[in-house]
Amino acid sequence: MAQLHFYIPDPIAEKIKHKAEHAHLSVSKYLVELVKREVADQWPEGYFELSGKWHGDTLERPSQGNYEERAEFD
Image (cartoon, rainbow, N blue to C red; front, side):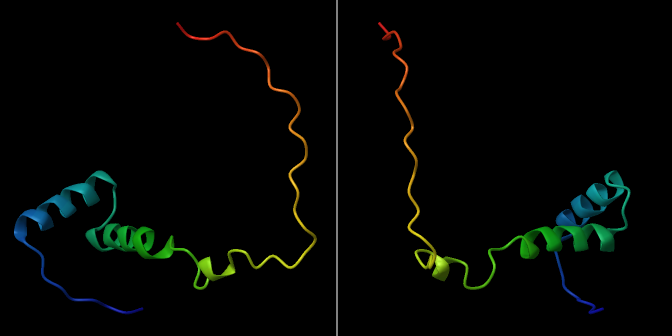
């Protein structure tokens, strides 16, 4: 597992310590969770290049039926 070393301002370090304590985690585990959420929840590589690339049968939306009549607002 990689180790990272970086500097942050003291006020931010205090906030991180406080939030880690509140979450019942060590500072290291708390930061790992923050980083995981930030980098792991990205769109997969090449995701947007797939748009419009469907090779199956033509997709057609079925009839939606009739809309109900509603009273108009005054």
